Amino acid sequence: PYFVYHGKRWNVDRNFIYGKLLERGHLKIDLSLAGTPPVDSDDNDARAGMPDLDATGEIGPSIQYTLRHDNGQHDDGQHDETIWRADLAIRKVVATDFSHLDDAGHTFSPQIYFSQRWLSEDTARWQFESTFGPVYGDDRYHDFFYEVAPQYATAEREAYSPDGGFGGWRLAAGMTRRKDNFWFGAFLRYYDLSDAVFVDSPLVKHEHSLLVGVAFAWILQSSKPTH
Image (cartoon, rainbow, N blue to C red):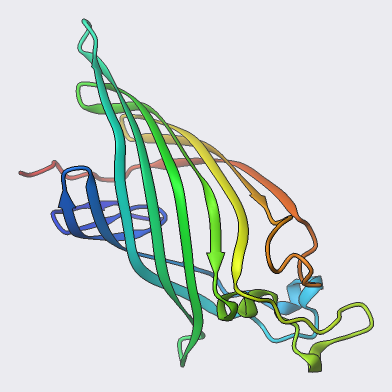
């Protein structure tokens, strides 16, 4: 279950929480929050015998600059909306088991965002979204996920400590459709770690990965927008 909220200062969707800090013309700055779930090392062959990974929380500014925003009106009342945007997210990361907080570094993610919506009477019928860009992290962030401390080294898993820097490429794309209270989505995500600074970590088992999936949602209740 999840909820979506759009207000004057805060937006909440399925993935992130955004707080509006500044909006001037093509430029918008949000306060964004994200995170990762905890990892049980007993369920991960690469981390067998190592400590579990705590959940992480991320917070920081998301800077968005709209490069192009077009609206095409059609005779039947329908119209299309096309958005090209340059985004930059800078976040502080903390790890927690909900009894303490640990510094887990910083992330830096510039990307290009593209959205195409086909609308009717101001209601999105179909929407395509994609993002593409590199991912960067400092040494503390990479240590959290990819370090092998000497006491956890084995014959098959050498001790390793990564540097900060380039963390690979990330591509995400998805198509969604909403009709009445039914929402459908299909997505793919591709990760390329072949040139990442931590690619030699024994915890990295694949340099490339592709994730595809579908999602369905039944909207239980929706309020009318107010102005």
